Image 1 (cartoon, one colour):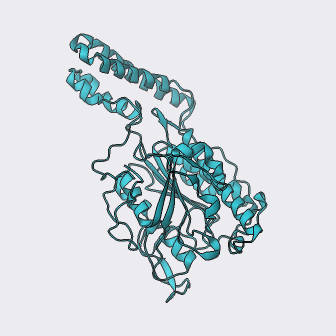
Image 2 (cartoon, rainbow, N blue to C red):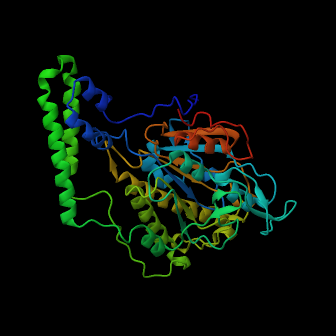
Image 3 (cartoon, one colour):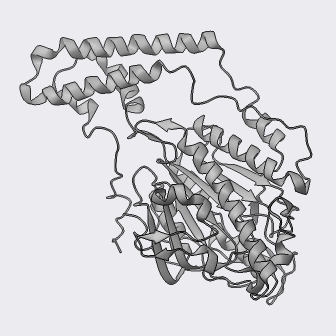
Length: 450
């Protein structure tokens, strides 16, 4: 496997032209009048300035490894039934097989799995039962997304946004995000409340949009003219670079003339009971739409989506399946369990695809929002009927701006998933070598990123 670089030396792959506009204009003696517009070019021409984003996804009650794990090798693999809806994104995923969520201390399998998933940390004593030497409480540390929030220090209205789909009551089976020890963060389960929070005041009328476009066009005209006026002041060796820069300006001009802005108020219908079991799929789509638009509008760069909760009893009637947790505890030889748990997890994979489709539809530079993001899908268990903690299924999507080589199936031998959490943080810019108290001092996940 490829040796991981440290965050300070890792160089993300860039899709745009490989030269510095600021350095080029300075070297050819660009006029002072051009200087204020260089940041505009740097932020709009190509993908080097596009923000990285992190999205955490959770689905509950384990999986069926024999129907989840691909066949084949690292770079030549075939998806099995559960992940088959994601075939279109094979080249943008990393499947991580063999990771173990270490479970120590208080709590039952579901409690420890849920609390440890993104914290890598043991549970504090509390009042939720669970046995194993005492009654368990909340997790004992912040989750990885909150550590990444601190590293990013992004100038966004929200440090992070937590989206939920019928997560249930306030207990350690229903919380996966933590601001710190004994500080669970509840996901928003009401799509109308989330809409009002994020988008109620969002919107630019057409006249204002045209004014903004005209203002940008005048800036671009000035930059274009100033560059061309310098034609007698640079050598033939610099001509190719200047021509490439002019082409970047022309690309911005073309993008500026597009009629539809990337960030807009989503159109949604909230005239239904968001807590009703039969509306689970509808709420899922509403939350995905809002999350993608919040990311596109740069309201946040860190988001999570929690489908249901640990010990989920959602009844998947829309795929011909029964109550999820009850099914997950049937024996391995039970055909009903195998068929219906496969169908349930396939449905979750289809929801992940819906999210990826939406992110891939948002253009950024020469790529998309998905290209510049790291999406991580996890579970609190490996298998429901054993409450197993190995191998817990993890799949990532997107290259985080080129930091991750995607299109791979990576296998590990009981490697603690804390190392994935460390790598996630490093990819997003955090300078850490350890995360959580279940695997201290571990470093990152070997071979995952470079």
